[in-house]
Image (cartoon, rainbow, N blue to C red):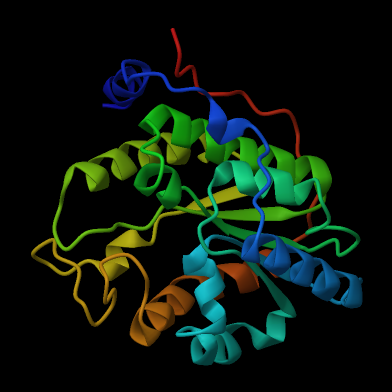
Length: 246
């Protein structure tokens, strides 16, 4: 099954590799980026957990605010989510201050859905982008324990994009299954009903989470974060890459 999965990724049409090239955004995105840098600067030495991602992560400040306070406040967290971000934008942000001097113990990452939704990247490009994000994060913060979440399902029912998300998630799970510094955590099933649909009570627009959806997310990850904070961390060793291209 795993061999078949990698073959599917290998045979996917190749794009321009933009998912792994650090890319700056302007306008309100840059304002948000600079605001995060100011928060990071003010919290040096006071951050244990960072949440990294796109609008779904930024939403902890909106629909997810109650769940954030209830489930994560004791973790001394900082939200590094910016709406619309793709993997390449995180790579740029990591090089431009978002992690400067805070030395988090745990980083929670969920990124990639906008690579599919906005630019129609291939499954292989999204996989490469997510791995590049993890690699860059560990380069910048070698002490950090990474909690890599699968890309959440989207759409009311199973569709082509969900199938592509599944390919990427399975490849990521295989890549990090024996990694001592990266924990891959599949929690997408918590958002899906028994018949395969996603309720509008959880994802009103079939992508972004409601207050209920954020509580589901918090309940799924808070115990794991607590355990990760309780164990020692170390410099990430070299990691073999999955052979996606032939």
